[in-house]
Length: 100
Image (cartoon, rainbow, N blue to C red; front, side):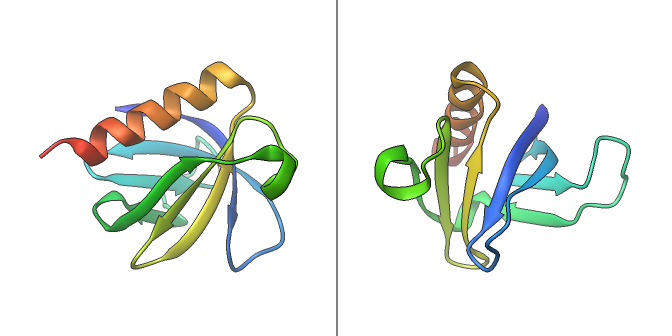
């Protein structure tokens, strides 16, 4: 299980929010912080239609970002604190999505 912090922006919001996340099974579970036992969002990775890095010059103007598009819950942009964390999160999501 992978957990940590990332900033998340759902397509429905113009605001970025720093969230604690856990990667559990085929779900990315979002919390307000690491002490909150109640998730505020769950991204079903089985319904992802696109997982890709973002071109920071054209799409977000933020480094270390990527996008998750889903069939069920819309689109999310995420960015990590640094390149290494971004690559770790992105690779973990990709691995989970490709696993049977």
